[in-house]
Length: 188
Image 1 (tube, rainbow, N blue to C red):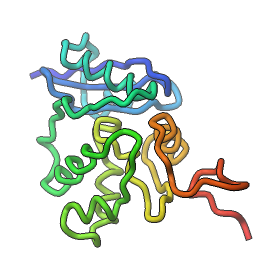
Image 2 (cartoon, rainbow, N blue to C red):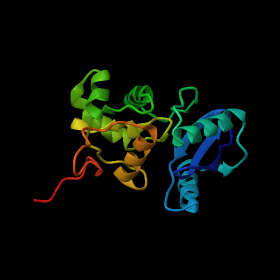
Image 3 (cartoon, one colour):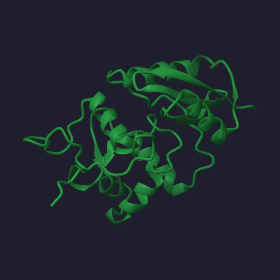
Image 4 (cartoon, rainbow, N blue to C red):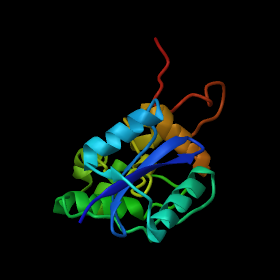
């Protein structure tokens, strides 16, 4: 079955989505420019550009709504996890249960999977997430509310932007330095 892709405008820039039939095979957050987002999506999926069917258009509207700050549930979106191993499937499934505006730590996800010591492995899996936003890896943070690595363009700044759009509370961001990302540490 042929695969198709398209870009769509959102408040954070042009995102990408690729599909076959009614299943999503990949999503991309915005790169520096739309052409770079398109190139990344095409390189990852080999998709041709096409007009999305109704179910994919609904997914696009819902993703866009979420990025506009609406509390949108994306659980209806069917993703193709066929190329993903058993442990990553469990990580992605657990991550999809985190509601908009809320966060869990990598350790929380690992605990839900039965072993808190797998937190680093959870982080590695989420760093290769083929479905950003649908699998909301931006809602998974480090211990004590720290924003840690984020593989999308812009890194932790993008992660913080997405969490801010969703209205998430991140750690104790109060006082003089409350406007700084939690990963930032003062120099000594």
